[in-house]
Amino acid sequence: MFASHKKPKQSELRRRLDGERRSAPIDLRGRIGPASGAGNRRGRVIDWRRSEQRAVELLDGLCARVAADHRAVPLDEGGG
Image 1 (cartoon, one colour):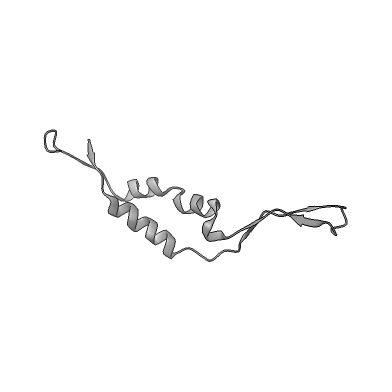
Image 2 (cartoon, one colour; image 1 turned 30 degrees about the vertical axis):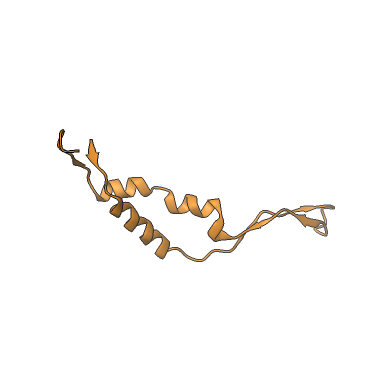
């Protein structure tokens, strides 16, 4: 069993949040109608801060980065 420390994960996530650049909303609208481009747009626009894409980009590689920077410390068998 290994001791888990939340601080390295929290500090790495905070570093990623602080270094995040502001991004434009994600536009999922598509054109419906003639190919001339005059068709109506249907769909939705998602705010970047609430998007799944933002979460994926923030969390992608987080565990590998934390594991590379911090090593696990074994606990004593009886010390819980």
